[in-house]
Image (cartoon, rainbow, N blue to C red; front, side, top):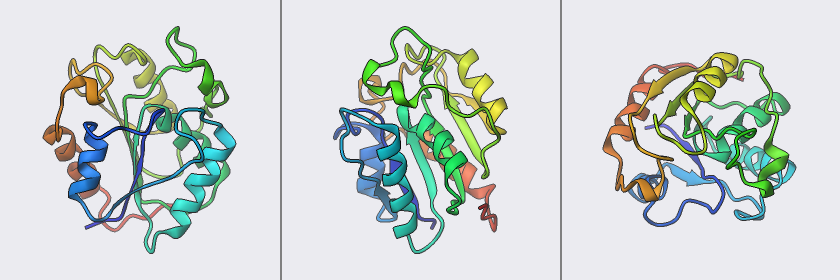
Length: 183
């Protein structure tokens, strides 16, 4: 089993969020810990992610939701720490009308290929990230793309519980990484 880093978005993914449920069920899933879940600052979140990756005994797979998808792109351009890949779920559009003002520092993510394999999963009716935006970012970042169906923002409000379909997608992504460590 791989090492994983769970990267929630604003608010930190509460107890009913699939990330929290996966973390409770998988001892190898650990959550990164920025100074504030509710007042995110890009530089601080990048430092927290870098520290969390450095603390793992093996290169982890990043499991990101929402704002943390943008974090991963910024971090990829600034850090040289090794990760096996990134599983990016429900990426918001920082130019969209519903993007939180308190997360403005995360806007304008790099349009460069990520330096590790990645997959973007998107809902067809996500109010924060339209499919066209997610597809465009996946292409810019050299990531594969999976449409998850109509699941809203793929969060606790989506009522997904343990989100077994998403867990299966993570397993498939991980299976494709066998032996690959990118830095």
